[in-house]
Image (cartoon, rainbow, N blue to C red; front, top):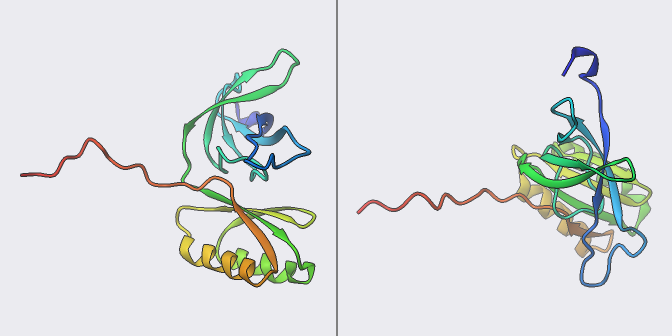
Length: 163
């Protein structure tokens, strides 16, 4: 890509996989900003935090395809970034500033839409501390929480124990 396109981002449409209760009821798709990794925009890095998706995380490398209606749509994940995504729905809006400051102190990225907060946890962060904090707030009734996409290190099945 040329240096004039370095800051370029494109919108990519992802179909939302609904959960058993049909959540989210009002959305069938989410559009994320992605950084093209080739001139055709057929390979991109996710550059925003998903609010509703369960199959992709911030930083993942994805492939796209052109939709007949003229937009790019998600095809598949090419490589995982190591980020995990969690969602928090505030029940007590007086806790919003405290929540945001604490999460930022724990080195996460976050996005918010009203009382819905999406967080991207980098592989270098203390995931246990972050999840404990989220679960403590959930138990206290301050917010609800859901996993978005949780990264797990792949197991190396090619390695066999030596005998």
